[in-house]
Image (cartoon, rainbow, N blue to C red; front, side, top):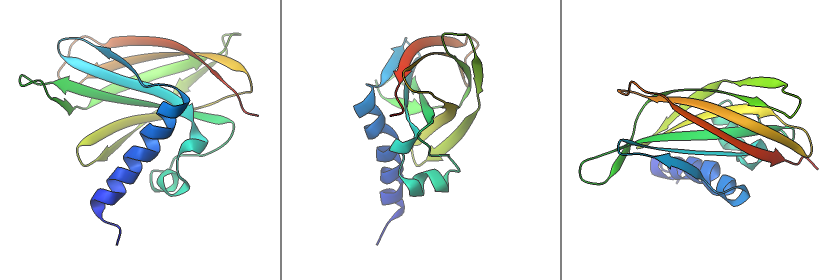
Length: 149
């Protein structure tokens, strides 16, 4: 019997563990929020998870996962809604706009965007994250190289 908790755990594991194996989770943090982000190959998603959330698996597509956590007075964190936008650019400055899908599962919220990749392509990823209740957006920029072979 596959329970609702089992389904949520499957989603969490399929989104985070393979991505972290490919590239460690990155994070920025201040006194109010933690923003976790990572880019990974779309083929790392389990087919049933991709289908359930209408995400495309392909060897020429990658995904970006963003999670925003608000720090609580007791030291814990809780997921919060955010406005997440961004773009991906290659070395020739060819740009792709990221369109994020919000996925809510139990006590988790993810923002997933996908983009095209080519073999041995270094991409610069620029994100703007505005957590709900915040007046100042966070700017995140990082580079990552993808291989399709």
